Image (cartoon, rainbow, N blue to C red):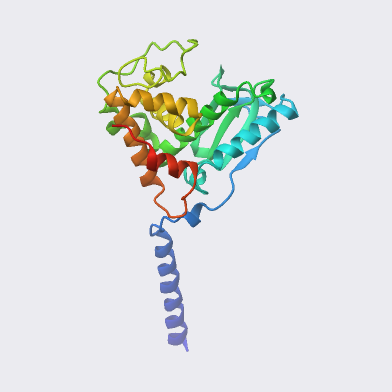
Length: 260
């Protein structure tokens, strides 16, 4: 009787050990792992290093929400989730470390924060909002691929013939324009550091059509920007290799964009 109990208990322990070891094995990377909706969080406040409030009008936040949904729909379902964007937090007076910002990445919380400016329901900031959303998701996408190594990003940096600048004029009215201000860089914002450079290229690919057209025009004459666009597209394809993306805006861009 004692032997039977011992054998039964020992067999149960082996089964538990096998189950535990199975959980430790890397799980297959499948689109189904990310098949859920992105939450759009409104009427909330934050305090600490990130601060914001809900002092926007209902019209403004609803307008912003519509734009966010339209941008999510450009990508394959689940792409944002895999990119560590489970939530988009919409709030007013957004600051990070005391500095006012238009958006902020928070991949450790699977979130991005976006600032809702007063009066946006009129549509006058739609293109800016559009490009900003894609810029911020790209930061989380970057982190999902590289973790904190996104701040070094050696394969990207190796393309540069000019270093990043420590003296960017953040108040410049042309900060976000796709005007190739320095060889190898699409915007002045791109020249500040590798993470912003990476996010600006993606913003150009997936944001407003006018920005995309300008980015493609830059590609024709700047081989470094062209190489960055190709590397970005390669990263996007490797990140989301799953079937089912046919017909999405994302799929069209990664398949048809040509930078010689």
